[in-house]
Length: 211
Image (cartoon, rainbow, N blue to C red; front, side, top):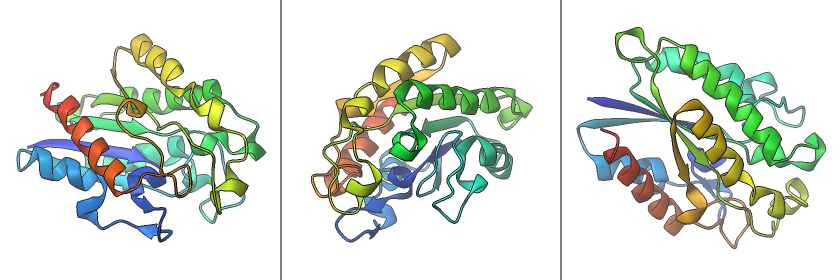
């Protein structure tokens, strides 16, 4: 069995912008991924609302536990052995109170990648393979998201370039999600049901090419 750990934020958690709740597992992109790949694969979903790459958030109850690089070693060891880590973080780094940009988000992802590379969470205590995914480009934030993401649409368009370069430097796999999905018109940040479906299929195709 091939174990795939999907590590991300609320998009991986399956946030439903229409009800401000959570999609059923079968409608989350990770659930679509599991259904598409089937029994030879085990998809391990580790998404958390508000998760950043390296930035602690005083506005959420998670604090340091909402920092991706902090909890990643624990999650890796919990689910070991892991064949592949699908890493998609950075959107929450752009929240204006952090004064961060896409380049800084990529640097944060680099820290996460380094944690994975030095881990022994893969088969035979080796490091797992890594698929780095550039998050979807933001639309104009609406509703509650307009107070959280006030000026980050243009900056999010830079994710793909920085993340692709990061993947090349580290010799890992890369996927630009904006080539397959758009953020929902409902809140401008998360994926709707159709977006989750499209992303699940795109990631499945990518993973099939790796194994």
